[in-house]
Image 1 (cartoon, helix red, strand yellow):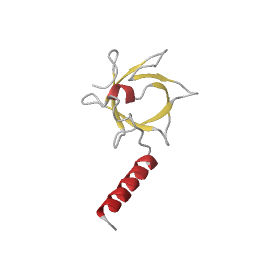
Image 2 (cartoon, rainbow, N blue to C red):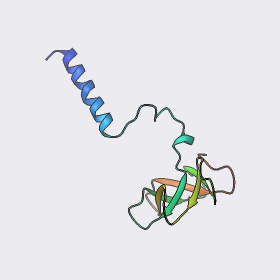
Image 3 (cartoon, helix red, strand yellow):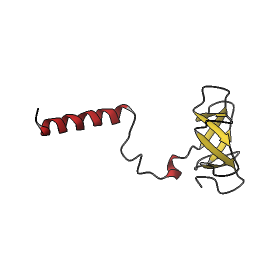
Length: 108
């Protein structure tokens, strides 16, 4: 097998692997504000989409709890039904560390 064929095979395997793990072109190019979780949130005890730890310092995301229009990064509306995603509040090994704020939600 020549080096060109090995390179082509390696490239094909890498492309298939990237597609199988859910990589989407353009997703990495978006800023943190477009990727930050926002929307209608339901709190659960297990099997959550995000394990969240509430912190005071060095959060991954500043969260503002709103009653209406959770349409921007860091704005969460807590609901019982029809949630966009679920969270479980934990004290260790979180997926996301948040700080609840009254203004200026989003990534720090």
